[in-house]
Image 1: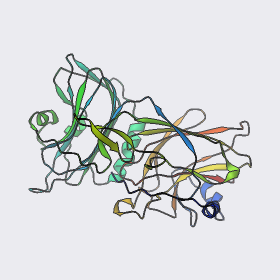
Image 2: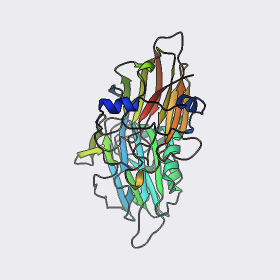
Image 3: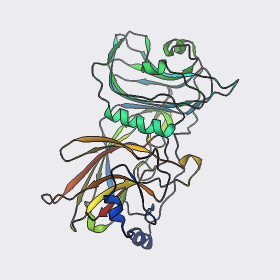
Length: 389
């Protein structure tokens, strides 16, 4: 995953006034576009838009494991993550690359396995399942992986694991070759009823994950780089705004997953419980509810852009996937952008949605679920722009 150094943004009054100046024709450009389209907004995009003051509450959720340290597994036969989990719900985010170059580049298998540490049979019931074919197109994998996870609703996916037995969490990974520099991306949520150990490993293509697990004795030391690895107690946030957004006040932005206003989640690594962090909060779900009103009859366009496109070689593109929920509680899962793979940077903006004022309601709500997109730089500013309808 790509995470960049963070810096503080000082918003002066002059900069704020400049940020509120909207180019001529902005409303028409946004309202004539379709959700997901790239819209060119010359002279408009900036990181200096006023920030929405928000409240962040931890929601009940699963134990959360992320495997992204090392991102590139450079040892042919090794365990890249190993964590114990308690009975209950578990979310696993696997983001690893075949990085073997010595003694030569070679195809590998990257798989996740689970061992029953209990004294009784363990039932593992898959609730959400997202598994991508290994590829060097990291942006596409990140977008599609989130779409599949958000859309997933596994039914009757139940397996029984005997005490001490080891099985593959994702049978699809067991059948796939991973060439050099290809990313393996898995995103799962499941429930277990016994204590268990979860491991992510790399091995030879002809070996099964469970059989390789029995013979591999190399656990790669963690380096506290990339997003990180470990087990985390926080997996879901609820985000609400402290002050009602009013279209008369101009443009504003919600900025989460920046490591400053929204710190990285912390947890532990390994049996000795050393401190871990998820630098990017990848895999965390932000269930967002923003209250707004229109005292001047305008609507709101929700847009985003690749604000850090000039910060390093890995920040040249951004793609994401979100879930939008309308007033009738209908959910729409959509990749952004829809008309191309990624957005590169200003003046490109992505239109997420247009929200129209309801004359029968003084206060309305914008509801969506956001999760930091894998392979993209952060933060992802979510900007609300008043528009003429």
